[in-house]
Image (cartoon, rainbow, N blue to C red; front, top):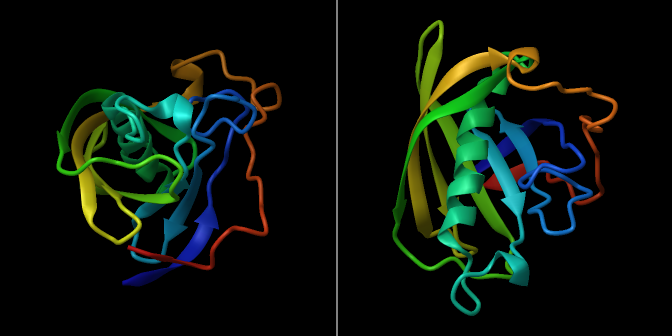
Length: 167
């Protein structure tokens, strides 16, 4: 099913998942969808492999963790998800050099914590990896010394940004 993109989220310069100036990073773009979910789009490269032509399971966990954790920013862009627990299940091998989609959503939300689930989708739409996580809500100044300008934390628009995303 296709979902309309409402807003693109910020990228930074050196984050493993969203850093646009991290040569070995995933350079993921995140999109808030009309159905309240967060979609991520990325293409794993050779440096992300475990077995030949297969993405490493740790990278799968990282992209799912980031996508679920960022889903809280749909409600409040000043609140970040700090991982408390993450459970990942691997169902199918994840290929390299293919554009992949990830979806994350909030399933339970309280004043201090939230829970969410997510999936990595293969190009044919099959679910390759699933995750369920629990996160603490925190403002960035309680997590790290984060200088928005220095980290280049900004929305970076591209001609490749989709208007709709198939999930």
